[in-house]
Length: 402
Image (tube, rainbow, N blue to C red; front, top):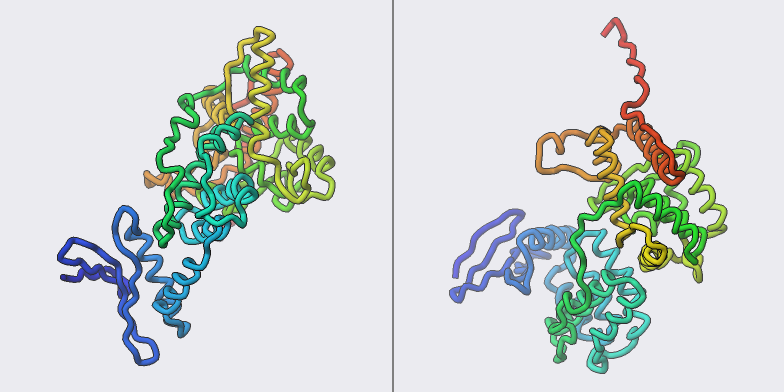
């Protein structure tokens, strides 16, 4: 056996068998303790996760708490948790994942799984994963169905890892057997945008959903960024919607600058939302956001209606509207940096991406207004040539004394 030191007091213990474990030696109340942070293996933890656990352990030691004793207590709590709901909560808390991924999986867990098996013991549940996912696919949410399968597999895997003698019902169910997807490279043409907007007015749905579809096209935000949006994020006076970092894919706040058309949509949504904190509240519960599957169903209905009329509109998703805006704005000749900022993309691979922190507010406001005007023109069947560059910005006068 030998040891390899890392940092912050953590080291790796390598056993003669080849097993690798992360450990931390410390002294607490005059007594030496060794904290076992976890093992490095396919079903174990990564070096990055071990370093995070090491920092947590050092913080506990500084506060006079024993990480080893707390770990034993946690193990006892896990062993005592036998219901599906309890294991689901433990898995959500213990799993290493990005905040945005955790929020998405919690939302699916709360909506699709917890209501069915909240207080059922894991040993009593034998879910037919294929049948469950098939129902979700039928209502127009194939991506959600695959997420449900993944979450079930990981919850059961977590329970088995902590001593439950049960089979994993999702282990032999592959994602491809649930749903398959076309390549994610779809961008609508101006003709398709005109057809989509015209058919959207005729499908059987709520006015707020029609407005939401237009908002996706005009703002190019991600699906969850709009569906989980609350009114506290919208500044009507300054025409800006600020999405907090907790809800962004890259954990950075993002400003969406609102043009005349998007402001009008926001005002209409505010009127329809009444006392709900959400821009798009659930039809049945004002304290909850609209269902993730709602807009999927609308896109299917729009395409189906267009096909019945013989109109050239291929299937598309809500995310394709985001790709559509990016593609067409680039083709119009707008600055790539402005477009990437609108999409909340950050190029971390180049030095320019790391050091360029410009928000391009004036330029982006101009571009988004031009984009909305172009979309209006396409919808009405008329021509419109956008102005690629904003009006000249006044130079800031320098102090002669500097």
